[in-house]
Length: 355
Image (cartoon, rainbow, N blue to C red):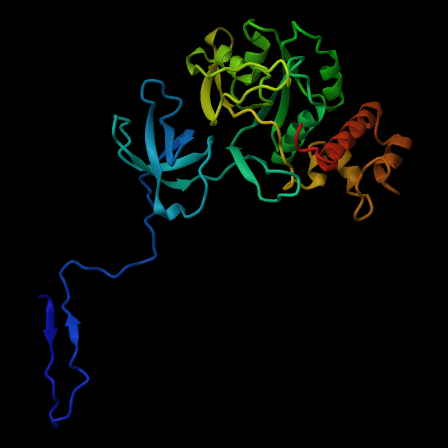
C-alpha cells in the first residue's frame, strides 16, 4: 500500500538497480523547512509568574477592562532561551484566558535590563532573576535578623551592573534605629525608606514605585513578604518568622511574582516583583569595573587607571587616589569612592557571597 515497483530487468536483460520500492507521492505533503513563521499577528504579554513550564502572562496590560491573564507554554522555536518574570513576550493561540486554555510564547522581546546572580563568586554561570526592571528595592531589617552589610553591598553591585537604580527599605525600625544602615548607603545617594512592624507603607514609598518596575530582594526573615502584602493586600504572600536561636529567617516565597501596586490614594500605579528570600548572592559574572559605571565622574577617572588596576585602597598608582588629592573628586566623590571600594571588597572577600 502506497508503494510501487519498477521492472526487475532492463531492455538488455540485466538486473536493474531501479528495482526498488519507491514511496508514492502523497497529495498535500510538503518538504520540511527551517524557516519559522514570523507570527506577525502575535499579541504582546508580560510574564507575571513562572511555574513548572507554565507561564502566567498579562495581555492587554494597561487596559483594565480588557486585560486578562493567560497561561502559556514555550514554543519550540524559542530553543534554550529562558523565559523569566518581567519578560515581554509574543503570544499566539488561545488568548481568551478561559480555564483550561493554553497559549504559546513564540518570541521574547528585547530586554532593557537583566538582574542576575551566580551560585557563588567562583561560578561565572549567571542566573537571570528578573527582566526589564528599572528599580531594585533592597529590603533589610534593622534587627531580627541582624543586618548583613556585605549582602546589601552585593545587591547594590548587582543593581549597578544591570543598570538598575537601587533603593533601600529598612523594616522593623521600631526595634532598632536605622541610623547605621542609612550611613552605609549615604555616599551612594541611595533613596532610603523606613517601615515599622504592622505599619502601613508610607506615601513616599508608594510614590517611589509609581511608573516603575521594581524588583524586591532581601535576606530571609527581613519582612519582605510582609511589606509586599501591605503594598498589595491581594498578594497574600506567605510570611515566616525568625529563629530566635540562629537569628535566621525561614524561606517563605518559592518563586518570583509580579504585582501591580497602586500609588498614594490610588493615583497611578507601578509593578513590584517579589523574589524568594536568599542567604547568598554570588557575583561571579560581574566585571568589577561595572561597579563604577553608574557614576560618570568616577568612571572617567577609573578609565585613566593603569591596566589591571584593582581600584582598591592598596592598589599602586590608582588614579582614584590622585583624583581625590588634586581635587578632581570633591568630598562627596571621595566618600563615594570609599563606598565603592567597600563594594569591591565585598565582591572578592573570602566567603563574601553568603551571610
